[in-house]
Image 1 (cartoon, rainbow, N blue to C red):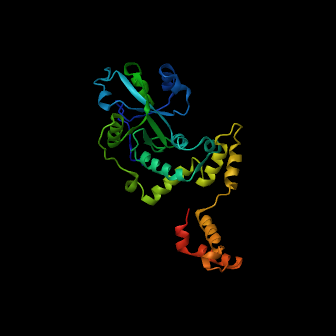
Image 2 (cartoon, helix red, strand yellow):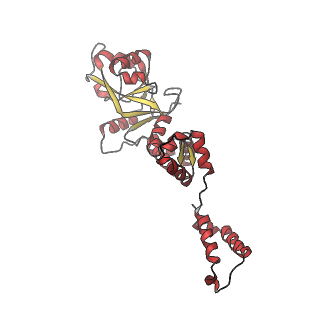
Image 3 (cartoon, rainbow, N blue to C red):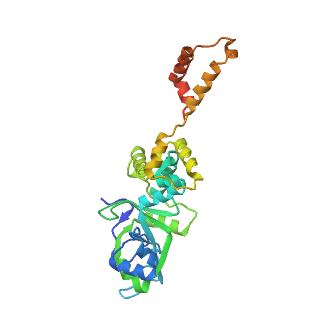
Amino acid sequence: MAHFCYKHPNGQDLEQGDLLERTPSLDLLLNEVHPHYHRTSSYRYFLVLTQSCDLVRRGADSECKSRYISIAGVRPLNLVLKRELDSWRSSVEVVADVAKKVYRQRLVDFLTKLLNNNDTRYFYFHDDPSLGPVEPHVAFLHLSIAIRSRDHYETCLKARKCSLDDTFQAKLGWLVGNLYSRVGTKDWVPNVEDKAAFDRRLGQLADSVAKWMPDKKVDLVVKKYRDTVGPIPSADGIRSEINAAQVETRRERVLKSVKQALQEPTLLGEKVLTPTEIASVERYLASMSQFKAATEG
């Protein structure tokens, strides 16, 4: 069964939301009208942005209303996630392909919007070997080019792989037109899977783009190399440094302060606890669930 956002093409005319494969003929066209798209292999598909009503041909030999067909580049999802993450993390993190854990939830939030097509910059195409792309892809709505319909309509039509369901065509039209209303399309939850399954999907996608490491450890190593004039170590070298970095947790800092306080004679009326007694207090505090909850982080 095809993914819920797709439908089989009508076979007659192009429609807004048609996904075009990068056929040899389309590739020759790109080389002619936009060499950058021709040279960049990550543009694996193209998305028709022109409104369907402007693409209808009134007869076998007639032309459509629109003089030009606008198409946008479609690239793999993993590339989009990397770009989004790179806009947040430091150059040291990029080199080592690691990221602070605090960014993971931000990426999951981005994925939630993206997969439900609520991000105005992109349009998500789920993998569907029976009809759509064989792996998840994303259309860059702001990266579009115009090609002359009179000369290239048939080339685009022959490259069509699938079309969008009518509601998703409407959603795409809203995104492209930057309207101030929301088209009600199906969301993943609860139409496809429950929240737990969707959360697992988001987590797996987020985990596929970076190695998530403790924020404070990453900050410590990033600070070390932020103003360096020498070469930055290799990715493995940076990750090793992050793993080896010694960063006190909030609980450790609190316990250290408690220990220092217990060593002050004035606290207990000139009585000084022995090291064994102080260690017992530390162990007792560390075992308390309330203390663990209050000092987590």
